Image 1: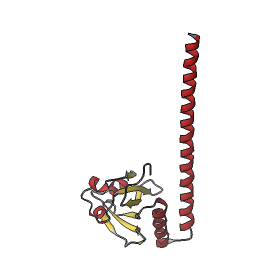
Image 2 (image 1 turned 180 degrees about the vertical axis):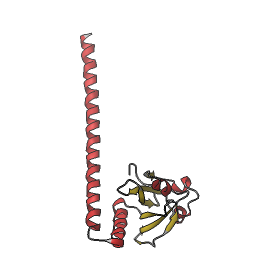
Image 3 (image 1 turned 45 degrees about the horizontal axis):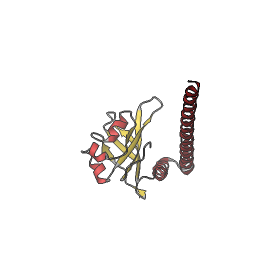
Length: 171
């Protein structure tokens, strides 16, 4: 019985070591991801720091698209008190600044963002929002958007990226 109990203890120690090794690898991956995020944030900050006004927003979306390796990025403000429309401040489109746009939010992923939630759809965005002509026009496959808030907490607009390929999880 003593030999059997010792054997069970050895098995439990081996399991604990394996679990600890897995947790350690997970923490290392998490730290590596945090370092990458810090480097990306520093890059964007350095690239947009010298710009003001419209040039600031243009540099921001261009560099966000570059950091996340996506074809499209835009920053927009809510247009009107009912928050059913957005007006872009800058729109990066593949390899150049696109024309700014006004866009109705109904039936779009940005509608959820302006309502106050992050919105991440790593693939099949057009199937999820079949009435969005803009997603079809851009041949969008994926979308990630975050609300931008006033100091009061009220949503003022959004920052979003889109691509014609799936986005990795977690994004």
